[in-house]
Amino acid sequence: MNILPKKRWHVRSKDNIARVRRDEAKAAEEEKERQARIKLAERETRTELLRQKARERLPTKDFIPLAKDEAPAENSHINFFQEVEDGVAESKSTNKEHEKEVKKEKEKYEKQIGYLTYLGQDTNEALGKRNWYDEVPDRSLNDTTEVNMKSKIREDPLRIMKKFMSNTDNTEKKKSEPIHKAVALSIESLKKKSKKGKRSSCSDESPHKKKHKKDKKRLKKKKRKHSSDTSISDNSEDEQLEFEKKRKLEILRMERLKREKEERVRSENLLAKLRGETVNKDDNVPKVVKKKYNDQFNPEIAKQNYRNN
Image (tube, rainbow, N blue to C red; front, side):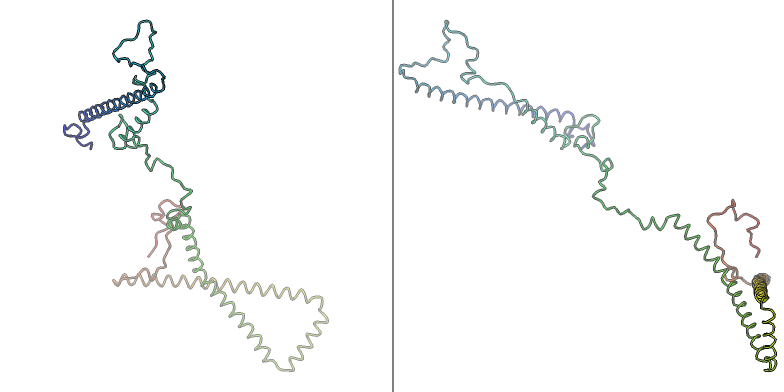
C-alpha cells in the first residue's frame, strides 16, 4: 500500500485520510445528536408520568396546571436547579473512563490495520511485537543435545592429531617387528643347536669313560665343595656374555641385509632408467608418512630431506 503515496487515487494519501477522518467525525456528531434527542424524549415522558402520579396522590381536585410559557411569580425565589430537579435539563457531563476505553480500542484497531502510524515507528512498534532474533530462546523446553555433534567429534583437531600419532607409532612398530623376530629366531636356533651338540657328545661316549667321569666328579665334589658356587656364577656370566655377543651380531647382520636390499633396489631402478623402462616407485620405495607438524621451516626445501633415487 505504500508504493505510490503521492497519487491522488491512492487509498492512504494525506487528502484521503483527512477526508475519511472528517466523514467519521461528522457521522459521530450526528449519532451523538440523535442519541441526545432520544434521551430528551425519554426524560420528558418520564417526567410527565411522574407528574400524573403526583396529581393522583393530592387530595385537592381543583388543581389547575400552569402553562409552560408562564413566568414565575415575582415574590418567589429564583431556583437555578429547577430543571435539574424536574429532570428536564440535559446533563452534558461525560464519562471520562468510558471515553478513554473507546479511544484506546480505536487506536488499537487503527494500528492493527496499519492506518495509525507515528513518525519513525515501524510495524513491530505499532503492533507491539518483537522479532525472533530480539527474543532470548527458551532453552528449558528444547532438547539438551547439541546440533551436529557427530560432525563436530569427527572434525575435532585433537582427535585427528591423536589418530595421526597412533598411525606413526604403528608404522614404527611394524618396521622394528621383523628385525626383533629375526633376532629371536636366530637366538632360539643357536640354543637348540648347542643343546643338540651336548646331547650328541654325551651319547657318543663309552660306558667306561662315563664311570671314570663320575668318579672324577665325586672327587671334585668332595675336594671343592666350597668353590662350587663361585664356578657356577662364573659360568652363568660367561653364558650371558656369549648370548649378548650373538644377539648383537644377529642385529648387525639383519641391518646389513636390509642395507644390501635397499642398494640392490636402487641399482635396479637406475639400470631400468638407463634402459628407458618405467619404474613403479610405489612398489619399490616404502611409503613415508608426511608429517603435519615439523620443527623446521619449509622442510621440503631442506637439503637433508631430499631423497636420492
